[in-house]
Image (cartoon, rainbow, N blue to C red; front, side, top):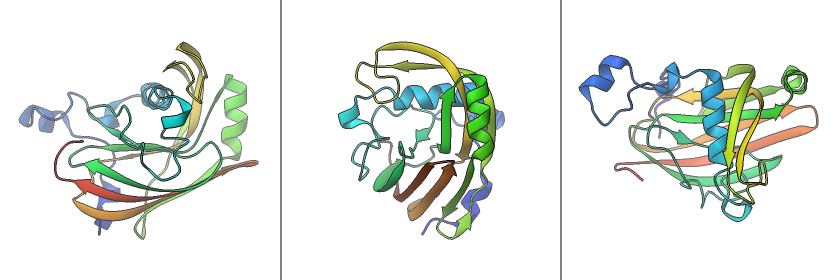
Length: 198
């Protein structure tokens, strides 16, 4: 089982840790601004066509698609439920939205006002971070289910997010539940923390 203490490890490594371990990124995930976190995640979600997209994925077979080297992204859904299995490399911070939105600043704020979410790692409650409307850029490929076109889209992003530090080895269950108005997202991940890098 994943240790409950994992939920206290919000963010990535410190600057001192990065200097001591060259395998770590120069900046921890916790140090990134909310605009950069959201731009990076949305660009990841838009980096795969619909048929292999991790957000559309029903069982986790595409969870490793186009992952960055300094974090591991998980996905909710475009609405609805999913049960996924996913192997996560050891030592990789995990980042994901509970519910998230794009649109104009006013549209984003209106949706965020309705947003509620809860995340459990095994039986431990995970801290959820509220990200206010922030200017972001989404870089996508043709046919992706986020922007549906290749190129860069400038918009606003907001939502409820989680930034976990690297989770310990073993297996565990991550439950993501979020709502905002008529939107409902419920995803269960059976996580296996791998020894090597994926």
